[in-house]
Image (cartoon, rainbow, N blue to C red):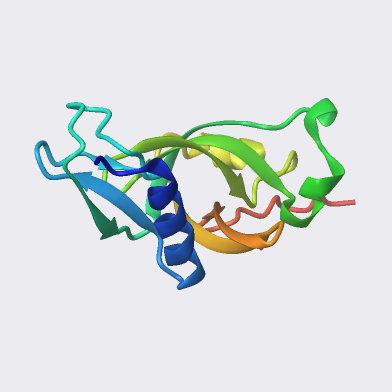
Length: 145
């Protein structure tokens, strides 16, 4: 009998509850899958093992959410942008990155690609999940009056 995806999802969330961000590493080709998947996207193998990842990465693209997509249930994580992040262990993923707002977005974009970010485990809707934060939030200089 093969590995059931439900078991993988449960293990992932149990690990988050224990304060660990985990991924699955292919034992055949070495690719890392995060969020964890049943099999390897690189070679198709299901010969996977659990590893703990650092949560460090670099933001390589970003887009600000439009006013039409800003939902009230996202208020607790604002300000944020939608971004493509390359995680230190290899995966390139679409995530939310906190610390970017309409005032400092140009300062962030000037440093692209490669803006340092880190993963943070936060409680949301009764379970723990992962969101990314800028390592350094740029402050916009105040205009002289």
